[in-house]
Length: 616
Image (tube, rainbow, N blue to C red; front, side, top):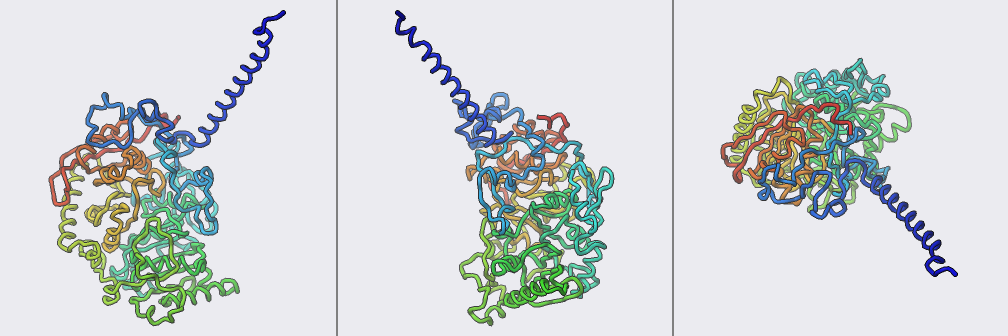
């Protein structure tokens, strides 16, 4: 007779076997889930990744969101600071974190494709942010410098040639060996943007065929800009364009524009207001931009209306303006009727182009039948609010003061750069404070350049970003140099961006707790004044911002960080891990009226990586 234990052994064996198989299956599913959910190099949540000490294993064990004042230990004794940061896979070499359609699919979002919501910003949640450095593509070279870059770039830096093939009959771009050339053509100006600009100037009877109209046209918005050749050739007319296009089927057009050194940005006329204040541009331009201007009661034209100054122009070059077939005539008649109800008038019309002008005052609006559509916006609507604000199908009326002035009240360019604009009063800044700010930044920039003069080569800096632009003094001080500046107004001081535009400069609103809407490797110089202190007060991580700055900074590019000594001490410990130790300078600047407390200035230069570093 068998013992009970002997009789039950086969059942126990089967049970153990089943348990082991179940564990293997569970582990496999768990690995598959984490591999799919987070992908290579992306950050998981602190709770999921933290060990018993609450550290992040990928970053070598630092704790996020600590007070800067607590972080004074040497790096060798500070486990919070990594000695190296992982490098992302090469497939992420063109990653734009908040404009990543893979993320939309992974998060199972359901954007309205008809309204172009899939081209708008959708940022990853904190647990899905990348905590690895974005590598350059294989064969990457230091970009060709301005002004040569206007006409040619290295093909290895943007290895995409589909636009050259698709637009081969329109002279957008031509592949030429290891370079890509830009003849200056466009869909409706095959013979070159320079000739097209002169033709428009003659249509509008501007003096000497100069598009700046005696300095009264300075800021232009070019929607659906292609590779931004229109904006490139406007620069010789002393006009600066914000060239705008989405990351759509022509996904690299803005990447080409920035590589060329032309002011440009990613953006879409979809459901959200563009991130600019009201009355920012003297002229908006659309050359075959393929936008349905009649959709949703003309809401996209009403967004242009919000952005144009009193008397501003809309240049429209498209078949609807000249073609005689029934379909284009139908669209033309409907647009004409809508714009008439918006009080716009035709200023000029010739061949392929028509130019409308926005009214100078509220008079026409007030004479309309009260039931006319589109209606005037409610009196409590803030036309300057633009960060994550939905577009509205209404007309933004002028304030009483602007109505009385019958215009913008701005000096012509270049005098407007240093002339106190009327809208200073709206943000509580006096003309005297404005002039003092201008003088302080002129001195600060001189000091920056003194520190960097031993390493700056001729034309080595073209694309510049001021991450906390205030009144635009930093950009104004750079006016004598052959650079352009993207002035960024953090959301909590977004009202100041209107002063940037009134000075004849360009910029955008942004929240530095999120990634910026640009391609990797697009800026030569980043200037961050008190940015780290401010995001720290919002509970956002300095480490995330450093990795984002690295993403948008070109190899051999510079960062100028001006902040509290505790902030500088902390950031300095990351420089080797970021590969920003190609050249360093740190000084204690002179105290001035803008110094809210003791400050230090750290200037660092990003290295051009060895290709071996990208093989992860």
